[in-house]
Length: 272
Length: 181
Ligand SMILES: [Cu+2]
Image (cartoon, rainbow over all chains, first blue to last red; front, side, top):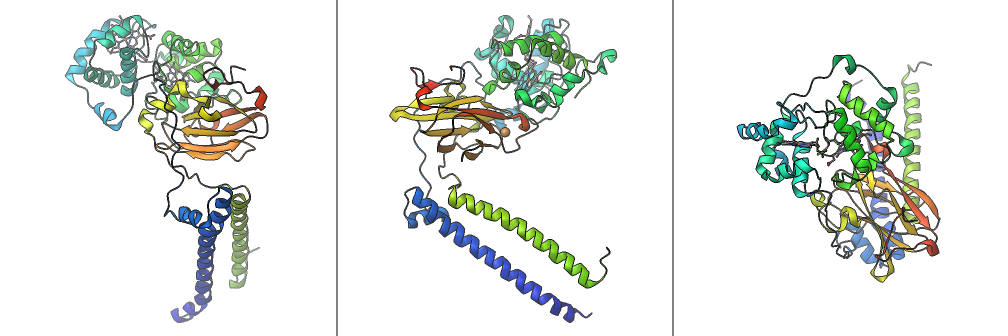
């Protein structure tokens, strides 16, 4: 067929398609900007003209209702507020960071890997998590006999430096004999959560690159005793520096047995 | 059946076009019905709030959330939607009384609906979402997050406990919570 003939076949399609689209558009304009505003405006006590102007966007909507001010303070949750400027400061490892880290060796180990399993490993922890915890110790949002004093001795800049330092250290190696041991029930909690209890999967926040809250700490390669103690602390409200009860609301739903098994899982099993 | 003539291909195409048009029309009619009969419309209250400091300043700090009876006997309930839970996870409200629900989020876009009611709104970082409503049914209503907000989205839901008006007893500070009853 010649192009001219083809165009002849196409013609009615083109015309009808245009007619249909234009009529849908016209219907939407009439319905959305005239009919709906008039019908809904009547119920809200607006006259037709005002309702239409508001629908079109010429007049503003209802002004914000002035809310009663609240004197509620954030204490003791946290004083940390994430901003892109703050995130950008977690840059490269500096000499200053390494020097501050010398003061942590006694408890957090030579390379951020603690010898005593009651103390947390810092090596490979996310910089944002370390920053937030130190900041919280300093402001009193999280309380610990030793760490509170240590954090109070650090300036904001030093907290950033030491956080960056540990974040770029290599994590503790896992014991190869336990790394592959799998506990099915716990895997389910870690990867799927428990919908009947409204329990989100741990790894929806703690998983590698999961996209949960910025300050979420890495749990894998952490020490078992430390993890279990923190979960108990969240559960009993002894630790309450998590923004909007993110961790407390999870931990209260866990049984003591589950806490033990979850701690073992993250401390020993090869995950993410 | 093999469609090998021009006619047959055309016929199949028209059938599928008709089917798609029918589905789209049905959806549009449902939306129009909801708009006209149930008065479902986008919120007109535009109010901004800084998501970075939501937990630090004023209205949406942890201790100020939940239901509170305020000046003029107005019942207001404040809820924060955060990955992957609502805070608080249960709010209590009286039935047959105008209730104002105010939502905000510090992280990503969430959305809520309260089952069996006309409450349905998006919760967008930077804005306060406000809904005025009257609950007529008593009981525990489910309030799920209906906007995918991350891996834990499917476990994100809260409860709206609607109690008869005479059983709604806020404390001396005007606050009412699910635990207290
Ligand atoms: Cu959500």
